[in-house]
Length: 155
Image (cartoon, rainbow, N blue to C red; front, side):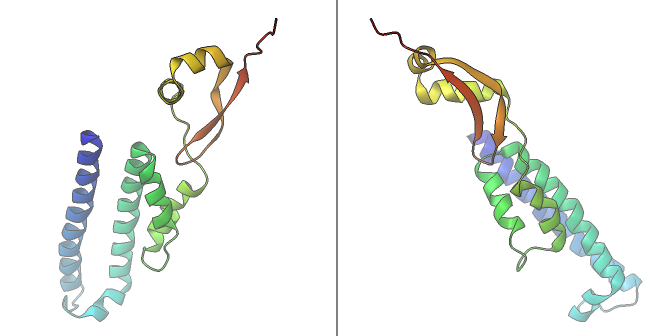
């Protein structure tokens, strides 16, 4: 848990510092183009818009990769952000939209360990004849596996 928290804070810090540095670069670009860096209308210049679009695209790709590694709750956060056209730049919406319908399958070893932890070894050993390691479907918080129950013979 501590490692996950550290990872989240590291990602947030990288995004923050990246945007601070980009802001500095944008001001330099504005001066180079002969624009007043303090004039908010200078943000509408095509070169400035192209600059910020590239920053958003690059940052959103990094964020997507980190969200996919963190899994679970963070996938939900990414899904939420990908649906917020009112507050998120279009580059984020496009990049994070993959979280809406295509999630990578978790490793079978991790999944099987979770099944054993949640149900207990006794239930897993006594109730299931088999559980297929390949998932039928994956989502942000779960995945589905086909399993065959043991048939109990009555005497």
